[in-house]
Length: 371
Length: 153
Image (tube, rainbow over all chains, first blue to last red; front, side):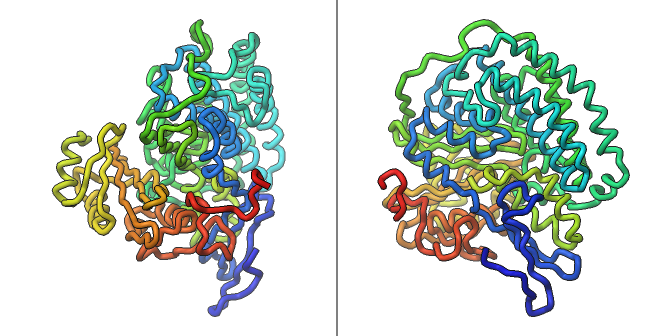
C-alpha cells in the first residue's frame, strides 16, 4: 500500500478501499479521491493476486495449462476450461463428440447459475441484507453437489479437456439436475420477494452507476454489465459454439444502464440458463465423451483465438503457437479486467455509499482481473 | 459485414505498407507502426467499418522484435479484423488507441509494464498490476529472469 489517508492540494480527501475490504470480495485496492461525500476519482491498483498465469502457461503443455485457468475466474471454472479446450481443439482440428458437447453446455449453464447465485447473495450482503446470502447458497449447494459427483471437485473442476470431457457423467447426473430445476423454480420467486421488490433495495440501485451503451462498448464491457446498458454482446448468440445455435434461448437485454438494470439482467439470465438445461438434459446422445487425441498434443504454427461467454462476460483465449508442445504466448482476455476499467467512469460524481452497489453489480472476481 | 478481400483491398489502399496474412481465421493485416493512429481512426469512424469494440489488445515478444496485436470488431456489422504492428525490441513506441477505445487505457498500461512498450499520448501510462519499483523490468518478455525462481531453486 503506497497511498495513505491524506488530502490533496485542493482539499480533496484520498482514501484506500481495500486491498482487504469485505465489499471488494478479494484483494482489490481502490484509491478514491473524495470531495465531501462525492467521488472525484477511483483509481484501481491491481496485482495483489497476480500469479502471471499467462507466463506460467508458456512452460506448460496443452494438456496441463487448462488446469491453471480454473484459478482465473474460479466461479466460472468450467467455462474457462471450456474456452481453452475449444482453442486447442481449433488448432488440432478435432471434432468433439456430440455427447461431450451436450455435457459441456450443461456444465456451462449450471456454472452460470451457480455463479449468479453467489453474486446475488453477495451483492445483497454488500447492501446490508444478510439473509439472501443463505438462500442463494442453499440452491448453489445443490449445483456444487452435482459437480462433485461428476467432476470430483466443487470449485476448480478441471473437467473439460481437449477433445471432450475428462470422464462420463455420473449415473445420477440427469436425475439430480432435474430435481435441481424443480427446486430452483420453486425458490426463484423468493428472490424477487426478498430483494428485487424491496423498496430500500430499489432506491439504492435505481439511477446509480449509470453506464451508457456507447461507453460500455468503448470500455470493452461485456456480459451482463454491457447487456444492462442494452448492448447485445452475448457470444453464445453472435458467435455460437457447441450447441448454442441449436437451443432456444433469449439474450437478456435491459436498457436502464444503471445498477438495477445490471441486477435484472443477471437475475433473468438464471432463468434463461434453466431453460437451456431443460432443453438439453433429456437429449444427451449416447456415444463417446472424448475424441481420441494423441498423448502429446502439438499445435501447428499459427494463431488461435476463441471467444466464449462466461458468467461475467466475454473470455478470449489467444494462443500463439510455434509448432511445439507448449504455447509460445497465451493471452487471456478476461471480462472482469475490462468491466473494472469502467468503474472510474461510472463512479465519478456519485456518493461514496453507492460505490459498493456499483461494484456489486459489476460482479468482480479479482483473480479473473489479475490473472 | 465485409468480406476478407474487400477488407484487405481497403486497408492496403489506405496503408501502403500493409501486408495480409494467409491462413488465419479472421482477416489479419500487418501494418507499419507509424500508420496505426490514422488507420485506427478510420476503422472506427468510417460508416461501413464502425469497428467500435476493441475486444483484445496484447503484445507478443519475438525476441528480435515485439508485435502489437489489436482484435477489433463492430457491434453493428459484426465483422472482425486483426491488426498487427511490429515494433523494434529496444525502442518500442506506438501511438495510443485509448482516445478511440477507452478499454485501451487499462490494456495498454498492462502491455506497458509487462512488455515495456511505450504508448505515446496515453493519458495515464504507469504501472497497473506490478508494484512500485518494477519500472524497466518487463516480466512477460522472454529474456526476463526472475531472481526468485521457484522452479530452479
